[in-house]
Image (tube, rainbow over all chains, first blue to last red; front, top):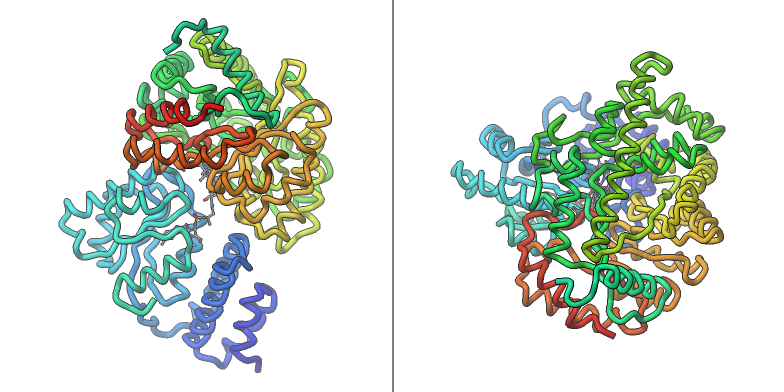
Length: 210
Length: 410
Ligand code: B12
């Protein structure tokens, strides 16, 4: 029987083939939540390597893909849902169809224990409002890669205010064209242009250790 | 704003200013260039009008330069269409005319790469290039064997609704319509250049090239698909990249007889790759494209999208004076330190600053930036391609132009 440490190591090294064969073997005897916990640890290390400049976006894309394939094996075996640490309603904002970064953030947030409700791309303010009503998330995450997306983000914050929901959620924005100016302009609570930092900030926004 | 000089004199002066900077010299002032895919022009026309009504686009561009006299304005109210150029790489008279994919061209072929205002999108939105996965991993060999034939025979029928059945009446009629549109579009570009020149603003004589791996990502396998292929099937990807070099160079040279001097090359997957992968899968073929064009008298205008910081040194592999390195998020000051005297640097204006700062802050920013980037020449000031949103306050753009006048003089 291989160990979870081997899985963590293979995942961190992005050895896709080995990861999948290890998971297939481990899933027979090890409770699925323990496998997920191992994945969480691996993604933390992958994130550290990214922040140290040892890994790049292509490694994150690959890690996200490997994580997705692990989940395909593990999720059907999960008897009861693991209780998420919080829920994030996430979407790329109106007018913008870039979603590679959003999907990376989603994978890392899920690996960290968040439940992520993904609204997809070109998401109108109304759809964000609707999703907040329906899923009652702690956090709303918006992604945008176009400069004009910043305007769309502002309109989502505005729509949440109008609907009386603004104070019920923390709002974080991300994506390649957001910065401190964008945070100020949109009225979001925080921003991140890197998925790891984004996950840490999400934790901090809900009062957890980042 | 023309002052006492005639438009001809202004065109000459501005063009000289730009060319001197490209030649790594000090012009009389730092040039300011703007490339737009239309968003800023939505101050004067709707998205729909800009993409489907060429007269409106000309009008809007003229209004823009009359309010904001920049040294050159590049107007590309169209989507990425390099895949269509590649399909006709062997026909230099056709290939460049469909490099940029316009709304009416989309109407002709109903391609799945793009979505348009007034068609799939609301009238006052901007166009969307969405791309897609139109090639299977099993097909790399066919791609490598003959990229041009593969794109024609396999990719276009999959990616364009109207070409689904090659040889059908519908497909043939659509290609004729495309031809008509292509010549209308070329005429529009020519007319626009004439209009702008009458207003004293020169247009850069551009031709076009592409990075092979980006071609695979943007038009065949989707960006993430290409990145995963690099991991899973490295040899297939490498071989395909090499096979794409030749047709890309042909397209780059197609406008040389018409006087083109600069090949515009936007980079997409550069930011994603580690230095190791960049040097293995991206740079060798891009370098070959740039160097071959340079040997033939065409300099490249490479738009390094996103962060290019970790790859900056590779630019020194190129011959001195090879062209223009146009940066988006990479700090141009840092780039100038590494590349100064070897490469002309372009960029420096973050769009979010134009959107949200005050005119005074913008002037301060330009003053500080030019303080570092101007000395020694070889520097062009510009926001990124497609960067300026229509919400940018007019005073801020004015401040930018005034600041260049004030702090950009040599
Ligand atoms: C890949 C790409 C595409 C792909 C998109 C594929 C996809 N499904 O995403 C394709 C080819 C389809 C595409 C299309 C277009 N693109 Co594009 N594209 C890019 C490119 C090269 C890379 C973007 C990217 O994926 N970056 C990598 C990801 C991983 O980074 P990221 O999103 O920042 O994500 C990280 C963090 O920000 C964070 N994060 C992301 N989301 C979130 C959310 C939250 C809540 C948090 C906390 C964190 C977080 O986590 C990620 C990992 O660390 C950029 C240039 C560049 N290098 O930025 C241009 C760019 C974004 N595109 C641009 C443009 C203009 C377009 C088009 C309009 C082109 C056209 N004329 O047709 C169309 C878009 C249509 C539309 N309406 O949206 C411009 C935008 C200019 C501007 N300033 O507005 C850019 C900047 C290129 C340029 N000209 O400079 N594009």
